[in-house]
Image (tube, rainbow, N blue to C red):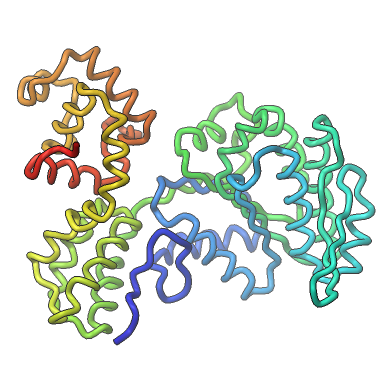
Length: 383
């Protein structure tokens, strides 16, 4: 019996990575020509796994790669040091040469450490002085370009959760960042982020520094036919009995969101093991099984909601995709007025319980919370 192949909640690589062939091919082409791509993706769409696949593919083709996640850095000082350190290591692995490279930097100072086995490693840290942080970042970027040229190597820098740049006195950093990036001829960039509105504002607002700096690529759902082949193929390989058409119900239940679908398939793989049969009834029960697993988390969120907000959540659970400001919706569910609904929606979006789509509709940030609410409507509210 093969192990459960449906992984979720972490970076997925290799044969466990569900189809993103078109997007991966486009990104590889763009990076081989040292392009600049702003990759915009809703949360849970497999963005980070796609970036990992991109890095693997580029390394196979002998391109140097550097990956930074802005979530990992509390301030511009730590980001500046990490940028210079990670990009340098992507191009040079010899410790002695790295120490020499780092020693030549003006605003960053080298840090040399010895491991238990006596192995020497070199790193960087910011010299004291907050005012030097942005110049240090620019110095690190310029150094990456110059080192790539000297090595006669293409360097691809992937910066994940790039919208977090705003927390670093964003506009000042943006201007400095653009000024340096547009001069680079040996470095390609992928700027990716899950805060869609922030990312799109950064690149489409004429007043922002990143306006038209590169191509915008929006990550959508995986094509259904491709995902059906992926799901059906793994279940058949595992020895399960199932109809391919039944797998479409899983995609519908997961709202075509890769994380949701992987999670549902992971649970289905386990619950169908006793007789190795995937039945419509088992598929139908999947969202509620996942909701039960996540019940402690949903209860915490539920207790943050006020009575009017809970009433609205009940209504949206019963009627997903409805227009909450319509009179029919308000009369059907006994809620209102519109001003109260607007206040509740704003608060629930801020709490990340609901999500406002680009089309202006409201949906659950976690589809399984909708099923959890439907289950407590039947079984009773949590205390």
